[in-house]
Every structure is written in structure tokens, then in C-alpha cells.
Length: 368
Image: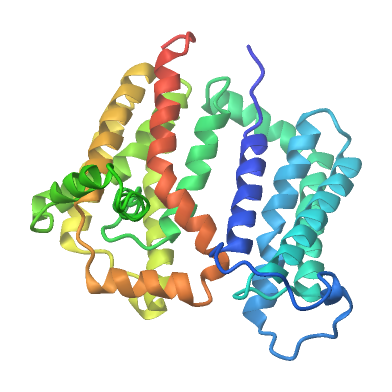
């Protein structure tokens, strides 16, 4: 059987990119610093620290250490040299981000952040090395061969990123991919006064005059929950494990939506997203996913493409209610700014990345 490619490699590169985005957001107002760029390295402990800052900086680089160490181990490195290299990579990445923040008026370079980021990378890399030391990687490899087909790293990466994407607020539950409106607005701004301005005006004129009907919102939730289930079925090994796999995807999505609602509106409102219509949609998508677990993988990939296309079309028409706007503002201007880039870009890009991956799965020459 062909060897599985490690999903840690694409995840490590993607996570590094998200760290760069989250560290340098909003990428505007660049100006020369009025002091030496490395002066922050010898500054005293800043008096305005909070526990949220400490925990977020520590945990923010922990997955990076895990992923880089795991990637190096799968490439043939020994565990502890790989952990040392992953820690060094995390430290250098954090040093670069903190130094570049000197040129951004809305960001503040901090030696405490640098130390916490490096410590987070060290903890993550050490955990990955311990996992390898006690043979848990080999157990995972065995379980992966039982549950998934070879060369499933891209699909697994998509499934692992899906809960992250759901953390960013959406106008409708599971309505990922809300990027077309912003792309249209950005293009309109860039093409203003040019020959392309008429094209963007035509695009804008095609928008809906009214929000989605209840049936449309029901279909959006169904497609948003069914799509990751079909991605899982496109890489799942044949047998009884396909059913618990899709049930696990549904359960993960529901739990993540609860966490996202709690983060945006407070723990007392964690279940506010659960309406009778959403319950109906979850039941419909779950039943459909269980039935579709009987179809071949290539058929599941084709159906997944259809579901993702429908999702993108419905999300483009999804209503932007005041509560959604309020939660969005909280992410972009509040303390969630540290996670804004990661969750936002994953939420925007996930459906389109899944489309590209499923197209590749359909074109693959492995057995259906």
C-alpha cells in the first residue's frame, strides 16, 4: 500500500501563513519607526498585560511547534533534533513578526510576546516529540490506514481546518465562504474610474433585493454541514467506519458552532444558534450523509463539489443581520484581532479549497 503523505506538512505552512497574517493585520499605515527596531528586546515588562494576552501568545505558537516537529519527524528527523529545530523556527518567526510590528502604528512589538511565542513553540514541539517517542505516531499511522485511503493528507487538512473556519462569525450557521461580497467591493474600489468599473457595477446589480427565504437558509445550513461530510467520504476507506466518520463530523461542527456563539455573544447565549430550522437542517444533512456513506469515493467527491457550489451561491445571498455585523466588528476591532486572520481566512477560503481538492480527487487515478 502506498505510504500516506503527512498532513502536518501543508498544515504547518498554512499555519505559518496565518500567523503572519494575524501578526501584521491590518497591513496598513506602514511608517518608519521612531526608534531602533530592536529596542523592544531590552524593554522592561509592560504594565498593561492581561491574562488573555499571555495565554493567547503562549497557545498561538503551540500548534506551530507541533506541526513543524511532526513534519520533520515524518521527513526522517529524529524526535528531539526535530523539536529543537521546530522551536528555533517558531522563535525566528516570532522575532520577525515582532520586529515588523515596529512599522505598524496599530501594533506594538514586545519582548514578552516573543518569549511567550517561543515558549509556546517549545511546548508544542516537545509534545510532538513525546508523542513520537512513545509510539503514538505509529498508532496514528495504523489507524489512518484503517480509516482513510492513501494520499489523503489534503483532505485531512481540510477536515482539521473546518472547525477553525467555523469560529469566525457567519450570518447563517455553517455558511462558510462569505468572501465574494468583499472581493466585489475591493475590485470596485480598485477599478474605480477605469474601464472595468462598469463590470463591477454589473456584478453589484445582480445582487438580491431581498434576503434568503427560510427554505434558502435551510438549504444553506444543509449544504454547509453536508459538504465536510462528503469531503470525509471522498477519502474514507471502505467499510463500516464511514458512518461514524460522518457522524463525528456533524458532532464536531455542532460543538464548534456552540463554541463560536459563546465566544461572540457570551456563554449564556452559546445555544442561540440552535433554532427549530437549524435542528431540521442538521437532521436532514445527517441523514443524507449516512445514506451517502454507501456511495463510492469518486461519487462522493462529485456530490461534494455540487454541495460546495450550492453553498457558495447561497452564502453570497445570505443576509447580513445586525447581530452578525456586531459580532464581526468585535472580531475585527476587539481582542479577537489576534485570531482574526486565522479564522477569517480559513472561513473564507475553506469551500474553495475543498472544491479544488475534490476536483483533484475526481481526477486521481486511484480506485473509486
